[in-house]
Image 1: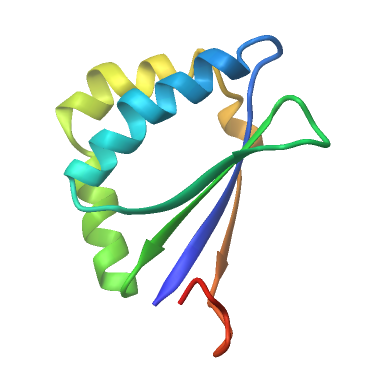
Image 2: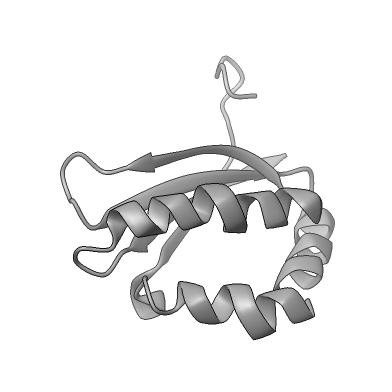
Length: 106
């Protein structure tokens, strides 16, 4: 099992709109497609940074879920296009990580 810690730069003044979109559109859609959503956050140090975590059981599962989400017509024609209006995709950072044996998140 591993996690993705994802940092999204949100365009100035759009954070409230972005959080609402994530919680009402993006996350529910990805969960419907099989993704495991762990948590999401807004940075207290940077008002334009949104952070979220997803969990995968294996690299194979991740690849299948990426395909199910990002290759879907809904994502390509609607969800992904609207997201691009609110975030700077070029500056997204993704950190893959594994929980240590005594981590509560395991």
